[in-house]
Length: 82
Figure 1 (tube, helix red, strand yellow):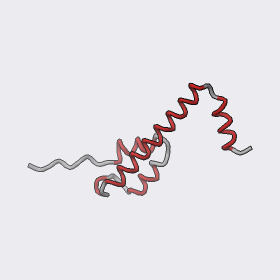
Figure 2: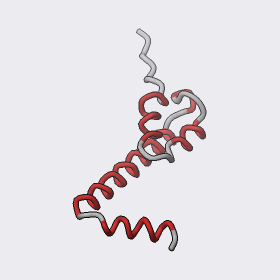
Figure 3: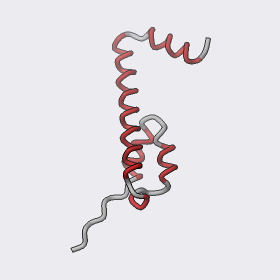
Figure 4: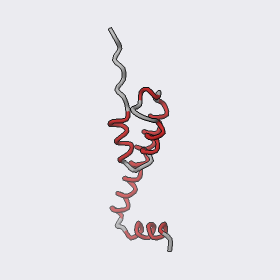
């Protein structure tokens, strides 16, 4: 049996509430990763701390990578001078 088959079997053995929780967490991770990737794509390099490629790779991890990017990876917007 493969690892994927084992994971599917374990998922099927979960109670419905457990399956719903797994689906919800997975959807949250995917949404957060997509949001971070889009934000990186739309920002100029000088608006991001560090290398865009490094942030993109970090955002491929589950929730931790995108959360770190949103907290520390973006530079605050420049304040207009008066």
